[in-house]
Image (cartoon, rainbow, N blue to C red; front, side, top):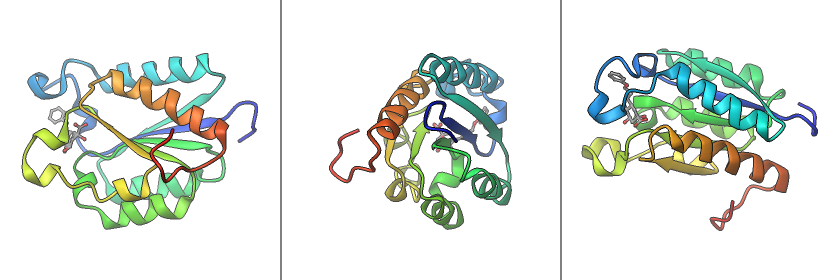
Length: 158
Ligand code: CA2
């Protein structure tokens, strides 16, 4: 990473490769490619670049974060169902020591009880949930603002 052109990792977990194909009542009709294009456009406008990755495998997500931790200035992650189950992913996010914004398309807090808990939230800089596709654009802007500010707040300030 260079300070003039930061790289952001955009990481998606299990089943999110099927976005736009099923369950439009929950996840809308946006595809993963649409989201990746949105994030790239928002990042490019702000002078950043994006590296996208999706996997249905917990270890592959962790390997990707490890392998790119020194190149990246920050991460936007929708970990899918691993959000609610994966201590290993939580530990990986903590270990890479770069800012991570957690995004969910749906409002996980308004759904089944098992979706109310995020194991990764305590080691993320912040969380955006329930804003659909638009949540990713907000995540890009807030993450880059946070990176530029050069700090990891504990007081809720981006
Ligand atoms: O709202 C989100 O973004 C979620 O991360 C989506 C995950 C879910 O497990 C989380 O609780 C919230 C599931 C993604 C499944 O995506 C599908 C896409 C098309 C058809 C079926 C599932």
